Image (cartoon, rainbow, N blue to C red; front, side):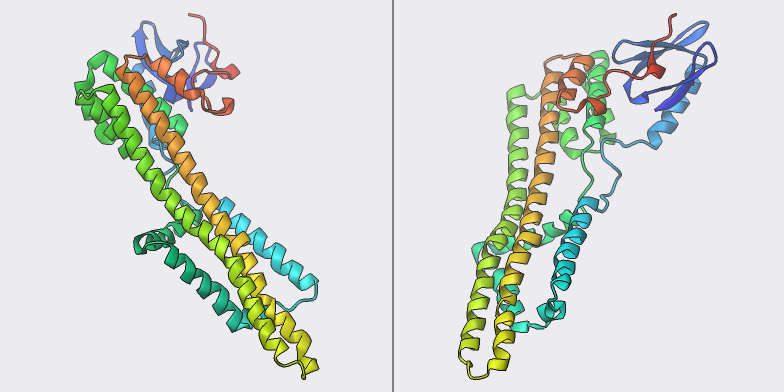
Length: 335
């Protein structure tokens, strides 16, 4: 948002990302929005351009920052999971230290689970899955759908006014390689069907890689409880082999079930949630890239910038749509 001044000297806010053009018609400057609204302001053309430029330097360019941040939801979920389980364990009178000092149980469940999952996947898939774990807590920048819609509408305006050749020079500043590749294919004059097949093939390949990483943790979530049961059985075998020592019987049975605890906890507290989170990130990226494909094909079909905005914003919740100004501050001023 930027702040401009009406003819009656009252300031008002306006979404600078939706400005289509600024006309200089003496004695006033006219700001024309993408939805057709017109605003008469006291600022000169240069002042409006400078204000928009300053706001643009501090606004997202289609991605939420140049580097991904910490995924707060994942951290909060992990903390709540640990608090709920281990505080509850203490309140029940159990000894949490025993969970970490039972080395045989930890070996059977943790090392055993990694072993069977490692066997179930190729070396390349195993290494890729372990690297993807970082994404759960420190994901890459997430796509800004609203910013994408604004940029695609602006590209469409340039295509209609200057042609595809002029668009190529503007794509050097495009932050998303997928968008840049899609539009460069149109600049090269590729057939729309060829463009669509190529882009959808790229989206599918990327999604399959992400799903393989998620599948790795899902597999771990399936095997971990089974390894926990195996650990409990092994512990009970050891206990039942020494029934003459009744003082240690209760302690031995409790220790045997520690393996079961770790198997169930690792599966439902870590592995399966990690898998779901990776799938959620993948779905978000696929949704975003499908919008890129729709916008690119619409542009090739000669759709107007406004049509592209209205078509793509249909997937956004009303609160995130920028195509129409709904605030009282943005009511057009009568000329």
